[in-house]
Length: 417
Image 1 (tube, rainbow, N blue to C red):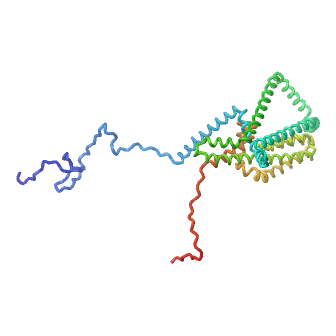
Image 2: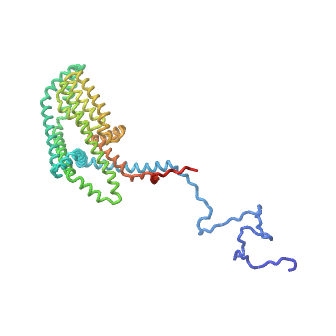
Image 3: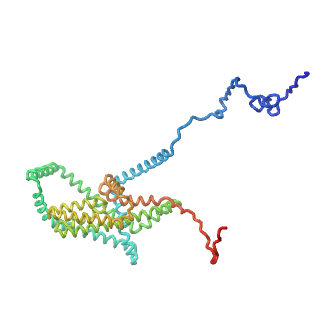
């Protein structure tokens, strides 16, 4: 072969197939030859069964902003809670003859439990203490109702004559009064055909009220006698890991409910005392019914006392004139200021820690959903639910702080050099 270089026919040791490992050809001095710019790139055809080609990117997706992700998470959770709450309220409305006695028995148990505890500390058994407390409550309520009915029957004729005199003094012509009377008589005559239906409806309502009262009384007795045992049984049925949370949520909720009930009873008694004394001084009839009405109206925050006071003001105007009505309104304003700045913060404010805006919304929603009963029960049970949800999460441990060891007596702190 002469001067020509001898080319070995053996394959390169780097690659058994004889192909250099590098992607570019080598020159005689062993360096890689740069690919020519003019030579076209050879397309690489991927095998159909070899899967996706390495290096191929998926189509870019728009990233979800963190705020939108958080709002979406909160949104579907709140929507689920709203649906569950709506379903619970619908069931409670359908079973109102059961749900209302249960709620009333819880409130009565919260009110009467201190009396039962006091009798037990005197040495009475729980059953006897409960019986004495419940019987005392029933005797007090029945006696009050009898007194109110007797006074209303005795003073109704006087109020009727005084009301007629007050209406005649109003700036209304006799023709207008005659038209109003004719319209009222026509309304009564138009509904005379449904008298039997009205009687049946009244009997049905009376039976439902009696059933609800008896069920409330029975549930109250059961809760006073064995309420602690029922709570212990319920805790024992829960998983072991959920019991501490149930205790943290249940006890503050019960304290909130009990505090609201006791504080509201004291505030209602204060309103009733002020109204009764004022009506007696002014010589207004129907003092007993109006006092009871003010007492019951005090259980509806923001609006109950106002409505009852307005009715008492009308009675004072009808019986004693405009001067007595103005005096009564001034007394009511002072009474409301004392309640707002003295009684509410100390008696109810430390238990019902709800903003007045929340209270107004809750009362309105309760009235729309459950009428008068919903307005009565909205605030205490909302406060109890808020207390339970606040104490339900696990407590956050306090931050760790390093504690220095006590120095021996007589030692000095070394000064920095």
